[in-house]
Length: 241
Image 1 (cartoon, rainbow, N blue to C red):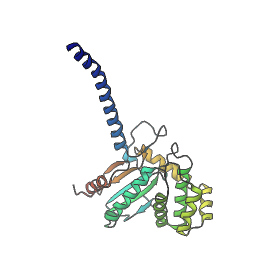
Image 2: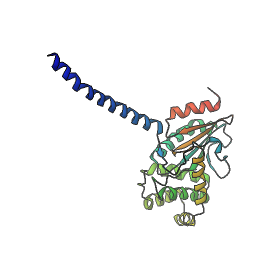
Image 3: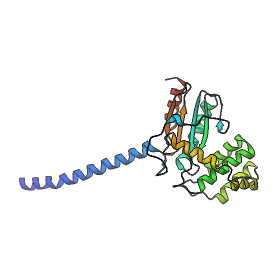
């Protein structure tokens, strides 16, 4: 009887170890997904961590939503085909409904197209957004971005031949003018420069954001963080913590 019990214990130990290993592995994967909350750049990004101080200053070239003199700025580097950017865009609109309406936070949008995940489309969409801004102004840029994220499925599944003409029509823009602008390639260097700046600041995936506090301190905001986490960081940036 004792031998059978020992035998049963011996058989149970490897199974228990294997089960524990599965649990640990699952926990690590879950933790990784929680901590990233975004899509990652592969070999396009160098191995060094980058520096927040490498962020290009906010200027008249940027698209700014809200009070340009707000004490706190959130500079987002985004990809129109990223599903996490889609989620984060909605969250940031909620931020602007409160802190933006009070003039406390400004939202700056910059391009970070992940070519390995979203070849051609992400850059074409970024160029379209820039051309929309050229034709209709900064407010039109934000209206385009809002509508694009509302309509599109992300992950390189967007049918640009359907979605873009629909948005241009809704916004009262000439499709021919936007198409001419995109085809000219005049914003390609601008988009590439913002991509490179994102990487230089430490961006390794999208969305990648940097919060500039009232005292000038910069804080990294990686992935599609929940509203509660962003609000907490904003309060810190305002000096309320």
